[in-house]
Structure formats: structure tokens, C-alpha cells
Length: 308
Image (cartoon, rainbow, N blue to C red):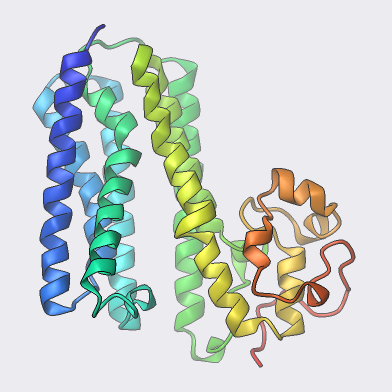
């Protein structure tokens, strides 16, 4: 099949580069107990792979250049944002139980390498291909999805950073701006833009190359069930679970897809759980009797106020 050998070479190369890059930062983290560069290492790895695969192939087809450019823009923006944020906040609570546990720390870095390599698969395969087809509707649709996703992710990140850095908001959860309409709008934006990358890659995919869909699927499952929403929901529930206003925020606010609170709170729970990702997993730290999804009270305001 066309490109099979070349695809394999590119997949192997990107795997070697990714593992080596993450290993270097793992060593730094383990020896110096310095975890402020963790997210920076993950985001910049995408940039390196995009530029490397584009340059090595050297065909510089328009689709290859555009998709590589989109990855570079996303990676640099996220890397700089996350690095700035961690330097301001001074700590990353995810590593509180890992700093003195080399095994757990190693597992995290292995998982990060898998995340980078897997999510990059659509762009890696596009850049490995020699053929070029004319632009199709899928290209435009994918680029639009990426633009909307990046706008949502960047806006959400900035709004939350400003909120958290404001002294009067200490001890409060963020429910301003786009956070009024989604409890995790940044994750929604990230999923949308990577699905857009995949859609824009489809015009050149053939045969087994379609398996690169595992990239956006892996990202989606990761954020929905592993290291994204569940961890943040658990943390917020433990901090604010006894606050009436917070429980009202959860009842009225979509966990992922931005929706007006007045619409979301009146939808039946079966619809939310089936189509809007309101999984019981996200509420296991709240007593069921204190969070009635089928009959929401009108008390409290969705303004991110008060901690007990």
C-alpha cells in the first residue's frame, strides 16, 4: 500500500524523538525535583514533531504546511501560557505525591510521551505522505474547527488566570466569562481543535492510515475519564462540596459543551449523561441527596462565590 514503509519510518522516528525528549525532562525533574517544566515539555514536544516531520519529508505541500503551522501555534501558545502560569502560582499540585516517588513520576512521564505521540498521529501521517490532493471541504471544516477550538481554549485559559490572580477571588471557583457556560471550556476547546486537525487530515488518508483517528479519540478519553475533568471535579468537590452556590453551579452548568445555564439545568439527567458528558464519575465526591440533578433549586447565583 502507498506510503506504508515511509509511514512506519516516520512513526518510529517520532516515537524515538518523543521518548528521548520526555526522558530528558524526566531526568531533570527527578534529580532536581523541579516540576515546573512538565507541561512546557509536553506542549513543545508537539512543536518539535510538527517541524521535524515537515522538514524531513521536504515536499512542503500546502496541507502539510498548514497543519504543521496550526500545531506549532497551538503548542507554543499552550507552552508559554502553562509555563507562565506555573511560575506565577509556584507549584503544581499534581506532583505532590510524586516528587518523592520515582515510580509514580516515571509513569506520569511515560504517559505524557504516549499522549504526545498518539495525538500527533494525524499530522505525522500527513507530513509523511508524498502525494498532494486539491483542497477539499474537509480541509476548510477542519481549519474552522481548529480556529474555534483554539479561541475557546485560549479565552478560557486567560479568563481563569485573571480570575485566580485577583486577590478578591481567593477561595472561589471560576464561573466568569465562558466558564458560566461550561465547567471545563478549555478542555472542550482542546478536543475541538484536535478533532479539527484530524478532519483536515482525512483527504490524504488511505487504508490503515485511517487508524490515526486514535489520536483525537485518545485525547478525548484522556480528558473525559483520566487526567482531565475527573481530577478537577474531584478537587473542586472536596473544596466546595458543602457550599450551596457551588452545587447550584454544577447543576446549572454543562461539564464540557458550552450551553446557557437556563437551558442546561432544565434538561433531563438522562439526556445530560448520554449526550452532554454529565457522568456520575464527576459527582462521586458529593452526597447524592445534596445534588439533585432532576430537580434543581432556584437558590444561589452562578457567580463563582464563596467557600465555606
